[in-house]
Image (cartoon, rainbow, N blue to C red; front, side):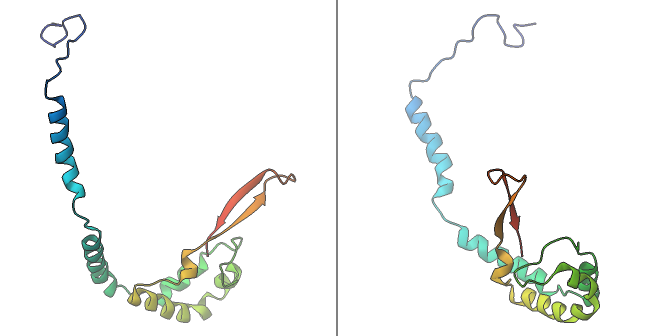
Length: 140
């Protein structure tokens, strides 16, 4: 049974081809052919076309904005505009129209404000000792 499975009981004898370097160079040439062309620009164009087609038909509704604002956790900190989450939650009906216009404008232009893409890292002490700091990332 061991013989049929290829296990003869002893150590396997590996034969090394005389043309190891030639074989290695062939493998290297085969796999490095993928690196000869930079397709990043082409990929970006195609992704933009796909997203452009999807986002052109996407419109944020006032009801969706108000629904998200109502679900905001009041205990979370505000963003770079210093607008408290408590205000977003309790004034969702008053704020939904202007935020809906802003969100749809950002989608139409395929651009987000730079403040929405950054975060501020604030060290918060875990215990009264200042050497034990827990790092938190605060997104806008």
